[in-house]
Length: 108
Image (cartoon, rainbow, N blue to C red; front, side, top):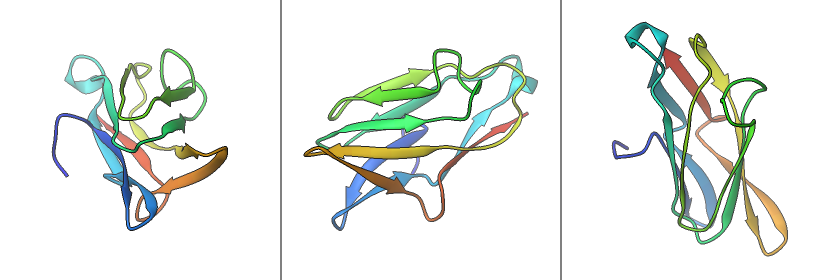
């Protein structure tokens, strides 16, 4: 799914999904790491947990219902980085999945 955002959290068939399952962003070889743009299109708050020291601000990103977030990646992190996403629905934390576990590939 190509669009304005690198990662989308959606609801499909009663489940929560991360699209694309593997997000690609430019790495440090292109003159600096491109910010990672995320869009939550569900009607609920979502929480994304990234590996320690992967993003500049913090390792946990919370996005409100129908909201967006832009996070800056740490420089020099070329590689594949798995992360997890949960949707907060009526007091429950429900996992959002890709075809496998979602990940971000930082490509030099």
